[in-house]
Picture 1 (cartoon, helix red, strand yellow):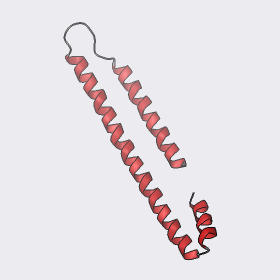
Picture 2 (cartoon, rainbow, N blue to C red):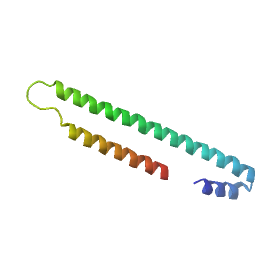
Picture 3 (tube, helix red, strand yellow):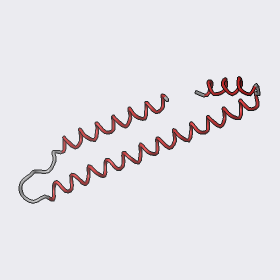
Length: 95
């Protein structure tokens, strides 16, 4: 992406200085977007785990009828969410 931006700016302006400044600015924006996406994934992962803990707590506090969710089910669901988050982070890296 940075190379295509540099080539486009060079052909548009014929200025090496402008190419360097634009490429550095684009690089900074990409780094900020990457950092923000990683923070978002960490935040969302924390929210998912809190929701799972609440569901487990409410399941154990229910009176009568239904049984609390099985620990294996919760563990498998957490592993699936973690794997999905890792795949999303990898896809963001490839962008």
